[in-house]
Structures are given as structure tokens and as C-alpha cells.
Image: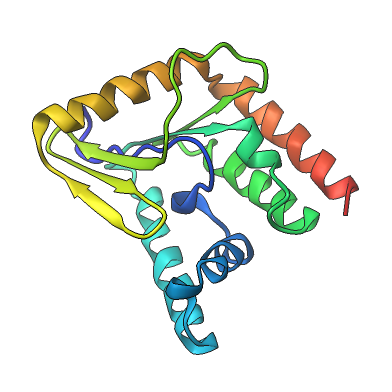
Length: 174
């Protein structure tokens, strides 16, 4: 496993979210949003963490469902920009983006978002908290789930093409 290998699956992809998308997601969780200034600080802090994606010494793999990308939680132009942003990240040599297309056969389903950092650390995103996981047996569970989700996903040009098509469709639906 690479030294830094966060991965996620399912709904909101906070690790690669644009400011507008992230602001709407965080403000929807009233307890996390707080005041306008607190919301702005939270969004800025989360966005600054994304700078690590540009560190070519680290590798990242994300698996996202097409349904999550098409879910109109945000206005069409925000979701279109989000799909375009994810597609641009997929062009980085150290970032792989997998998209599980609607209709793909998937052998398992994640019940919540998660990130696997390495074989010693994972985080699980629950509705009300983020849980740090360090037990090797628990991490193995998430590694197996990620492998299953990755097998159902399309990577490379197929994923970038689908992201472009999703962005175009969402942009037209403003």
C-alpha cells in the first residue's frame, strides 16, 4: 500500500470537494456549520487539506458512485463544476478516480463514507462524527470493501469521459 492512500466511496466526496459544494454540504449539517464566520473557516480548512493531492510523493485513489455525482443536492452549476474538478484531479499522475456507473453490478454496498490512509489507519464518516479506526481487523474490512467497490468502478479515460458527460448534463439543467 502506498504511504498515503485515502479512499472513499458513496455519497459526498469531501476530500475532493470544491468550495461551493463543500459549503452547502457543511451548512446542511447545522451542528457543524455554526456562524457564517465559523462555516467559512471550516470550509477553508477542509479545502486547504486538499493541497496534499498535488504532492506527487503520495498516491490517492477515490471511488465515487455516478449517483452521488448526479445527486442534485447543490444547484446544477455547482454540481457541474464539482464533476469537472474531479475530472481534472483524475489527470494528476498520483490520483486515480474510479466511477461506479449506474447499472454496474456491485457485490457490496458501503453504509457510510470512509477513508483508508494505510494498513494502520482509517476514518469512518458517520452522520454525527468521524471515527478513527486503528484495529487491523477493522481496517481489513474497509480494505476488502474498497477492493470490491474498485472492481465495480471504471478508471482512467472511461471515468474522465463519464465525469465530463455528467458535468455537461448538470450544467444544461441549471
